[in-house]
Image (cartoon, rainbow, N blue to C red; front, side, top):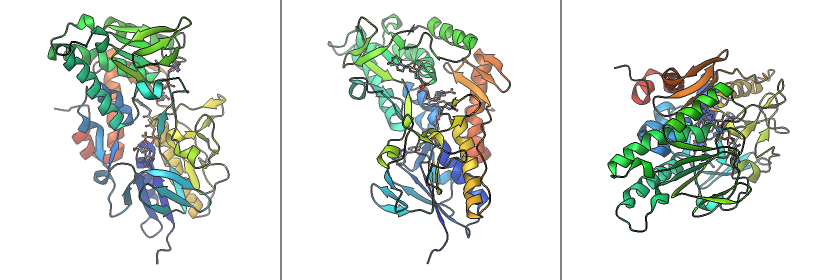
Length: 403
Ligand code: FAD
Ligand code: NAD
């Protein structure tokens, strides 16, 4: 009979993969059984999804087989979809089975938030997961492929409209300004016929971010042919495009993408957790209030920055740091020791604006622009691969090519 406590980790993204790795390190096989549950048998780098969606990266570089990183001999790997958490009976309900837990780590990531905007769910593409981005990439290419052979295809069918000028929208536009000239060449289309439009409700794209860096990003994207519409609220999405602003103007496009915001996994609400803007406001030790054996990490967690009086932004950087605190606290709980408080160590923010351009600030606020920023972004991406799978994974999937 199995008397070891069972730790169940839900979701193999940044938070779940790193929490599982840390748990393996913290606990011997005799001390606990570890189970990792994920929808697919692969982990994907969410931070590279804008590249996948634009078609500027090989899809296989973006995903990694989970069993290549985490040994199935050490961790029980279950590839299934979580449908709900039955907290009263300490059970996870999956599409095809169910499983009890002693300790639970919820790291199911984000879902796109449409804020109830009419027509958005029906007509817009989302940069949400591996498959939604494959679909978006195929759709863009299809619009170009049909342009010269389908008499119904007009210039609007080539236009790409991106709603929301946060980091996801802006990084995606950065990839598009590099990809579109290549698609034009491939399908014999005049580049001047293709509009790439970003629509942002706030007075500026990347609201709240450093002004110099935002100015740089905007200029770089505009010079490469993107239209940036700021101070323009999207009111509705139709089959034809976005309806925007006070005059309800229609902007038409053959490809409509919504990158206007994220919320925590809907499994949280289905499971009866108390939510703040779709996430669980966790205690300082990352546990769900009232549930001593449930940790919520990554984009599912609303973690307050007490100094600033607002939550930390949902990032991969934060999800990985949550993972360490969570794994340490599970060990502490098992040993009846005091739990540690989560503290965020900000390493900065760097965004790509295509393959060779970028901007951001690192460590103590040092600003980077252009090629050095693009290179730094690749270093950050590769650092994660190294932390996850060591030099072998870095050589296999890394972006910085040493030779
Ligand atoms: P995720 O990494 O999204 O993982 C969630 C996992 O759960 C996935 O494997 C998914 O398949 C699985 N899952 C979901 N639902 C279920 C279910 N019901 N059943 C089973 N499995 C399920 N942050 C940064 O710090 N730096 C960046 O440069 C950066 N760039 C980004 C670029 C883009 C385009 C986007 C969209 C985000 C970016 N972010 C960045 C934010 C970052 O990606 C997220 O904050 C991070 O992925 C959150 O990690 P997570 O573990 O909570 O979720
Ligand atoms: P976000 O919430 O950061 O940005 C959404 C944007 O959409 C906002 O600028 C908002 O004003 C705009 N918007 C919302 N409603 C609108 C409307 N009706 N009309 C027009 N515009 C509207 O979401 P995101 O960009 O998906 O980012 C999610 C998280 O991932 C953030 O924490 C971000 O920092 C992180 N991220 C980080 C990086 C990076 O570090 N390089 C890259 C991508 C994402």
